[in-house]
Image 1 (cartoon, rainbow, N blue to C red):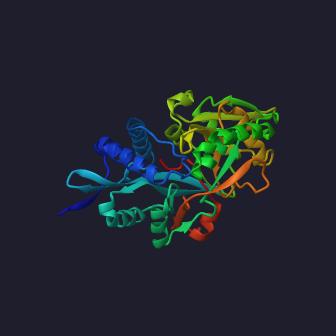
Image 2: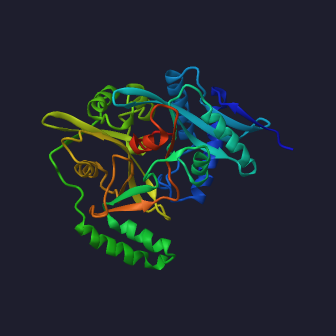
Image 3: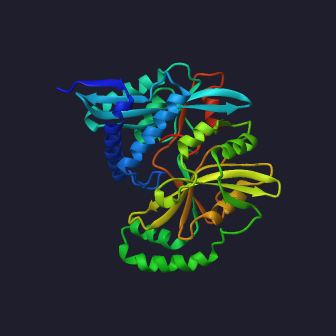
Length: 366
C-alpha cells in the first residue's frame, strides 16, 4: 500500500523534479493541446534551468519561505506544486503575493493534490494568492477554496499575420486533411489583405539591461492596477539573457521609443502551434507602455513589425487592461478550455475587487 508524504521541496530535489515535470507536462500537452501555451514544449534541461533560476530568485525574495511542495511515494516524486513569491504594487502600496504553478499529481494520487493545495493556501504572511496557469482541475480547486476567477482569463487573443497555416489548421481540425492545399492557397490570397506590419513612428531596439527595463516599467505602469513589481531581480529571473536569440529558446525583450525617449517594452517568445506544428507562432509574454500617449492597438502594430518574417500568428492572453473587441481587424478571441487565472485575497482588498484589478504577465508563473 502506498504511503504518500507531502514535503517541502529543497534544492537537492530539483533534478528529480525536472524529470517529473517534463513527463507531466508532455502528458498534459497530449491530453490538452489547445491551452494558451500553444502546444509549445520544453526540454528536460530547459525545465531544470528554469527551476534553478526560480529557486535562486525565491531565496532572494523570501529566504525563509518554501519553494513548493512535493508528493512522494517512498522516495519517488509523484506530485508537485511550486510557489512563486512576488511583490505587487497598487496605488503606491506594496503587497506580498504567493503564486502557484506546475501543479501536477499522478492520477492514482489525485486526492493528495487537494491536501497539497490547502497547505499552499495556509502559507503565512502573504496578502493574496494567485494562480496564472490553471486548468479545468485546478480552477475547480480554487473555487472550492473560496478563490475567485479572474474575468476573461479563459480568453486568448489571436492576431493572424499570415493566414495560410491557420486556414490549414481549420480544415485539419475538421478532419479534412485532403483540403490542406486548398486551405493554404486561400490563406495566401487572404494574406494580401492583412496589413499588420506598419510603421507608427516608434523606434524598436533590443533591451540594453534589466535596469533599463525596471526603470521604464516604474515610469509607465498604471497605479490603478495591481501589477507585478518589475524589479531588476524579477526581470533577471524571467529574462536571464537579454542578448539571447529565439533559436536558444529564450524570450526576446525589446524597448520602443519616440522622440521623448522610451515609452515601454515587450517580451515575446516563439514556438510552433497546430496539429501538425505548422503554425509559426509568437506569444506576448509581457508588455508595458505609456498609456496616455499610445493605445494598445498601436503597440500591437509595433510588436507585429518586430517579429521574425516567417511568423504566422501572434497571441496574447486577455487581462483586465488588455481587451480587443470583435471589430479589431484580423484578431480573434479564442475560448480556452478553462479560466487560467484565479486569486484569493487576505488583505484589505477583497477577492471580488482584486480579480478586477490584478494584471498578470503571462510569465507570472513558471
